Length: 294
Image (tube, one colour):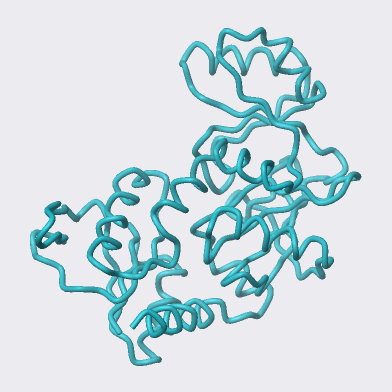
């Protein structure tokens, strides 16, 4: 079987682990930089070029598309799908999940609890925006962002007003979200593959920060999740039609709340902490999906 990984950095832990496992199981695997590709769109023979050379057919594609290459990477992935390749997460599912506003709307429609969130026209009064999420402290997030980038906390009314007004001036789209004090800078990363939570860790923010992301200096620990948390993570993945996703959950007084969906979760932290061979599970799923389609 021929497998492509769409990634801008072939040295990343996740790419190396997936490559090692795939090759061990007898598959050919190639890491492709999306920004080094161009596509030919036509009804008779759609194709893809990489570094100026026509790419052969790939049975499957593992998209690991970062924010910097999001628009081009998603459209390139769609071309792979048009050419007949199975995608671990489809271009449509990634488009919905990468847009934080869209994903939160779909989660709430499905009855999945999330932190109170507001997104309104910039003509709205700042005071009303702050009141919508229960006052300060509050969280402000860029619509597109990952690994804790573009996420800030406003602890006072004055700082919240200043940050919101600054975003308004630059016409930047943001989400304003309630701050869950009782979470104390901790969340759960539940990794869902093929409608199963295959691993989960607790992430704790470093001292002086509220973001628990491991890339921002947070620490990861083994954790036992509840059956309710397990069901919520699976439902969140299914709601956005994602075969593999990291579902981030915080434990609030009113119950578990889904805060983020990561469509390209890093394997390093969760494999190291949980001891689960995630890369093997990914290749196993791809084998089953490709074989079942033939």
